[in-house]
Length: 224
Image 1 (tube, helix red, strand yellow):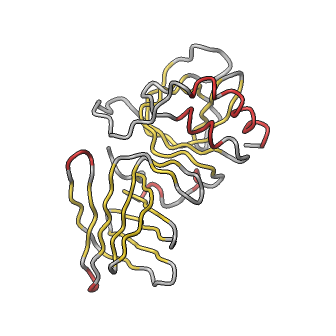
Image 2 (cartoon, rainbow, N blue to C red):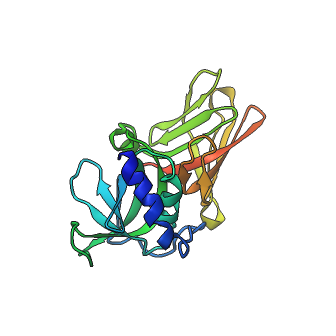
């Protein structure tokens, strides 16, 4: 998305942003009939539009789940670049012409500046991705184990156990290879301090006596 559409988002979206709130707890409603989709956001004719990855169709966004997507997109649009969104919802006929329908968003997983997220080869295989800064770290979990990357440290690939906790929280932990690694995850809005990316989970990594904080989101292979 070029700079001009980004600037248009700034002008258009604040009209709607005032009534948008990002839920900090998981939605209890059933996800039956909903589809998780990734794609690019743009603005046209006073509407926020969503174009699914590798498609030409564009859908008018209706934030029916009060996820805060309009507000988050408006804030990120202040910086030029392609806006990527990872969301869940339902498709319906549009109430306005000029597009291919309406996307009724029920859940926001992440929204960020990215021109490559649609082509991420790892997304569909992951159950969770977490990362943070100062120092930089990232953790990718899948059905085959988890891989921890830290600045100045070799990659650590180990099996793990997942423990479900109250209020939608959970943890991933391992004591393989003589190291104890714990990742604690909570369903709370989280902003990446370096990129401005907004993600739906807050993460805390505990390893080697250190506690490192960051954000996280569900990968494509996690069915929630």
